Image 1 (spheres, rainbow, N blue to C red):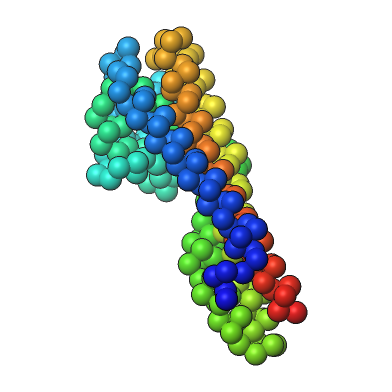
Image 2: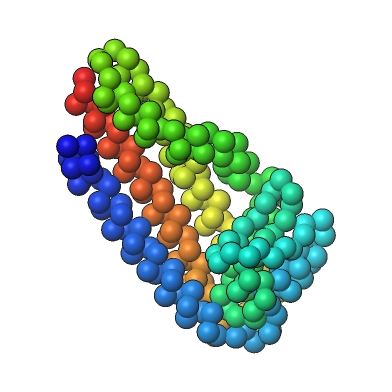
Length: 230
């Protein structure tokens, strides 16, 4: 039975366990840091605007988005978008996340190569994530020649999604590193606030590592099923 194949137990289940652990870490770190008010009393939106102005990124806007943990930087529209809890609150979690998104804006401004590579892979990743498994399953059920061809095509498509997840890792870790640097260098964090803020950013980065592990696990499962078909 497909759902009970060896690759599912060898690769996918460990990746799922790791993903649950990462989600638990980020939830705990975010909840803890959300309860602690920053000494600066700046909201995430206020901090983001100040950092952008100080870094010379005056053309980047700060926008509020109405969904939880929807924080991101849009390089096309040059906008830092913050969820309500980050945009409106002066917590350590809000400051860390807002500074992280400013870190992405700074990457864009400086021409950080992995960010450009990630953006170029985005259309392929979307196509691969959505179409690869249905295409692979059709190939698994079809005759030898056509089935193998479809399975190979699905593997190539999903490989693009895997590359997207892998190149995301240095992008996210670098944004967090930039965030901590600007927060400390410009005096927006006290020494006693550093560990809690860094804990939030490290936990968030762990979720990207879990996503990459899940993508690799599914690719390994595809390759194992394809090998058995041969």
